Image (cartoon, rainbow, N blue to C red; front, side, top):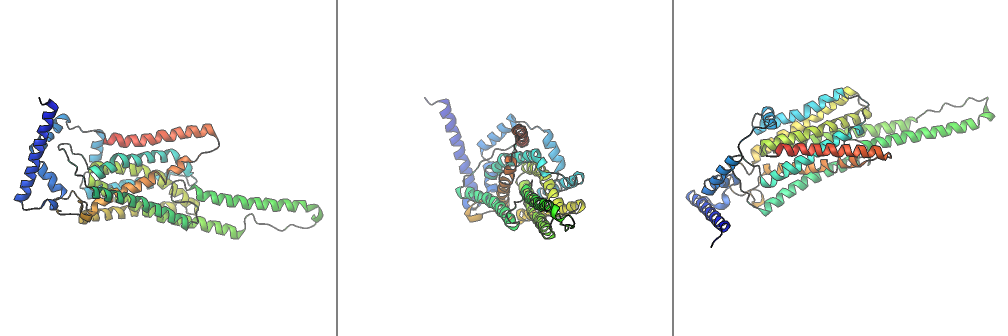
Length: 414
């Protein structure tokens, strides 16, 4: 006797065979080759299968629509098309963090932002691992429809290549900045390495002066009638050299910040064209990352000789990079298309179903992986000599990191 499970499997197999037959018949009827069908067209024809329609009804009945608080807030903040929502998101991530700089004192220590940096790391990694990567390889879920994923090995390889390109792009940016500044440190939140070199140089110079002062005192009994020559506290040549080096680091950091903001704009456009949920969660993650990022850059500019007003103005100028990246991403999506576009048929990139617009989201994921790990984690690993203080600080940082990741998980949990 055939068991109930086997009968169910047999029924599903028959239904799938009917689905395949219907799709094939539609292809023949429309005189369109299977290889010329786009992903959206295949999905549309699969929805006509009886089994798929039954699964759709079961999904709607078993998971009724509920409007959560986060979805209501996101619907209010992003009410338009993907292009409009991407531009709005760019304003959200660029405006408030820069206006907050007016409240920051000029002598703020970027290392005091370690808890905020840990929170931003959790948000970035949570958005990448919980939202971007599943969306890249599996697509976005829909409430009233079941979706099928066609496995294309070459497509997955190209998506992986795009992730790696995004990661390596930021490696190259960071490495180039380190070379340009003479190895004094890359573009991070704390910018601590470059400042340490300046402090060490100043301390060494002061020590040399104290040594020369002591030698003058030892010779004083023999030369009391002579007036010792005035020795400057810091040689003009050395002081000029240090100031030039620090100021160069400030300007190079502005260039790196401008480039970084371009990738943020690309992230906004690619995520909203993927789905409204992915766009909203990416906006939240980038927003919390931008706060310590902008404050750290602000502190570096102040220490590079900028006034508070000039530093704020420079940060607003670099924010234009985000708008530029968003417009560039929108242009790629609109003119390059993506696999979800209904008007595109035939093979895409290298014979796969991918379009140029599909490569932006994995590129963004690669940049987020770099920023959330290589660019920030070393700062969180820095410790002092006070073990009890560092233990409390570490626990606080981990709590902040898990909080940021938990928010990303809670937003997408259905």
